[in-house]
Image (cartoon, rainbow over all chains, first blue to last red; front, side, top):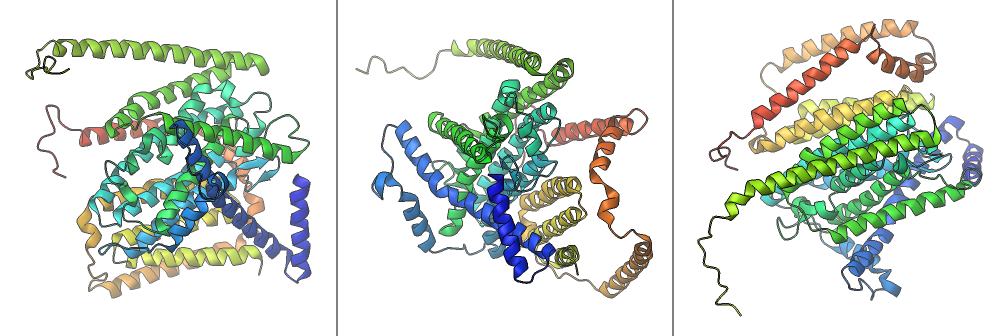
Length: 400
Length: 179
């Protein structure tokens, strides 16, 4: 409960003031301690997340996953961490030593910093900035910077290529992510995360803006660089991309950073579109709100893993075309339509819900019609080419 | 010495040291990273002035756009990364003298202003009301809507110009850059 956490806060304050420090110093010191606790918990979550992902992806692929180290393979991540800790950290010969070591820190820091504005329970939020969404987006770009520096400082052509592709993908998919994040801002009337969660008391924004939620989820998965968008670390193509020269715990930081980033975007989707800590009885018992938050985040994380295990990897030209020709115009249309409909639907409650759902439905129908027309036009443009006889003899008679 | 003063001194020192390292780093990439630290220090100063909005806008505009643009530009011209020319040329004494005089002038003005400022700056500024006023004035017919719309037209023109400059000419990309 909030009473529990403010009780801990009061106890620590009395303890430190009793030791002779000034109250203002104690407040700042406790803020630093809270930040340290939040950062440690969010990175330590990776131990559980990696196990969950490996088991789930294994089951999707009809195998068992890690099951030797510990009961059900629970200690597998600890074994991996121990291995990574004891490996030698090799720095390539012409590499920029300071930047090489700094890059993984920036990547992990940008992910952990998002947890500072995450509303975990009613009243339990690190820092209620009134532009929380803008903060989330800006800190995400620091991760892009870290990846760029990693590829650049490795003195390796494949790392540089991987870094180019990564920056292209992350910067491209930041555009529909920001556009889709403007929709809950419109619906809630504020950019602050606590205000967005409190505005979902009646309906989660998933019901009011399903298209925006879908666009946000897709572009966030592309931002993290996992799922069908993991061409950045395509082992078979560019041999692990920007972190090719990283070994030992420096690679471990990229590894951990990616999983914690996936969990963080699941948490963001749960907070912004599913209602965060909203649920029956959450206002009265804040710990119940924390439980709802964890449950919703786990559901979205399961969906993210499910998407990763299901779809094949897409190519870079397909990724660019999908972003700039489809997702970004769709996000712009959704934003404009939502802005207009929100002004028209002056009643609260079910009227507003009906207006928004029908507007979204119309957009989906029009998009499907447009896609069908485009597909037919493309197929007809390719028809004459298929009728040219191929110069290669078809070995049908020679086969069995 | 209140906590705010201590935090301000630490942040100011970090920002100043980063700013000095920006201009004295032999490698451009390091200079870019020190620039990011200096800009982040300024964002912390905005937070100390109890204006979270400007701090986040500072991070979003300067660090996410300008600093990343600088580093991408350095990344795309690989030869620049390796050059470590001498940092000072022959005229560094005169340049240092000019900079010191500018600094002295700014300090004189700032100290005169400081004597008339109210004791608690944060209470006077009221960032919440200021933010709403800013939002309303951007769409108010009597205020700044025309510059707002003209700025968006300018941005669209810049976007189109960038695409035209970077576009592969029709008919094949044969003799473009050989990377």
